[in-house]
Image 1 (cartoon, rainbow, N blue to C red):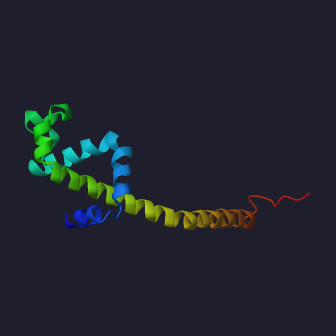
Image 2 (cartoon, rainbow, N blue to C red; image 1 turned 45 degrees about the vertical axis):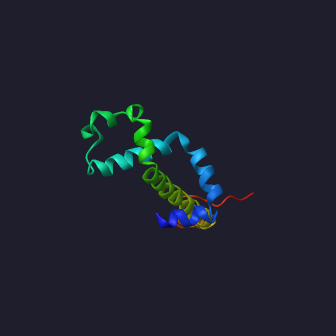
Image 3 (cartoon, rainbow, N blue to C red; image 1 turned 90 degrees about the horizontal axis):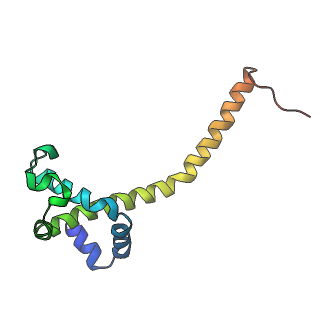
Length: 122
């Protein structure tokens, strides 16, 4: 949690975090609530949650407000995962494309070696 406070207080990634929450709003609240409830109910299946928590719409605003700190922490963890995964993906995309080109070239060479395809000539 200290990491989250440090990042947000110093405005490091604050804008990106806010954009992430806005962009991913269709799932992030559900996920944060589910993960916190899973922890509270000691990793039980959602079917075993008390009736007040089985359906997202039934979870009270009071409960969400009381657990805002934990819910925000979970959202921040999700954000960090997506942020880091995006950085890794962007870094590896050119490498993967180059490997794909090499694989295609080698595949053609092997097929030509065994006479399965004939080089095109005019």
